[in-house]
Image (tube, rainbow, N blue to C red; front, side):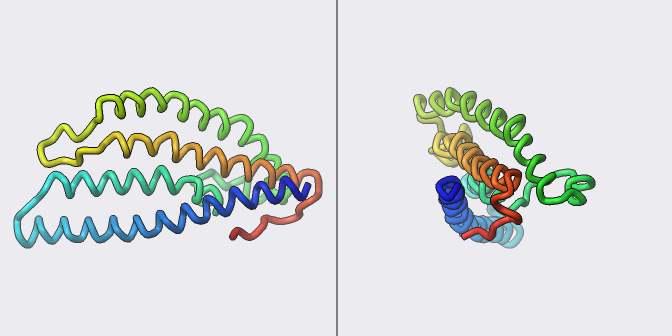
Length: 176
């Protein structure tokens, strides 16, 4: 059981570090939006590159930060029933939810997006707009990577739920 717990802790640390990195990208996004707004409303100048950079950074944050969000139980869910359940019942909900929804969903998105990413790399896809970001294929590669991080964090959640179900762990662990 210690090996399982250590493995889950390792996954948690990976997503914790990724989440810390993404927080800096979030600060960068705030700066880019601020500069864009000042340029548009003060100097009456707008660049396609800046506007595309905003949504590229947002997409990166959303995709790569999703595993971190799962680690900290920050995803949206209907908590009307779940929050009133005991820790074992919550563990069962998480355990079954991982098996029936999270793992198959991540697998489906990862496998279907790989062809999409491969095509983008093959044609060296960039922005169709003049002055846009030329390396769009890099952003598209974040789709399978982001869902791989969610899948990994799902494995950690699955392991931790299993440990609670069998009585080896009573409450949610603190992360790194």
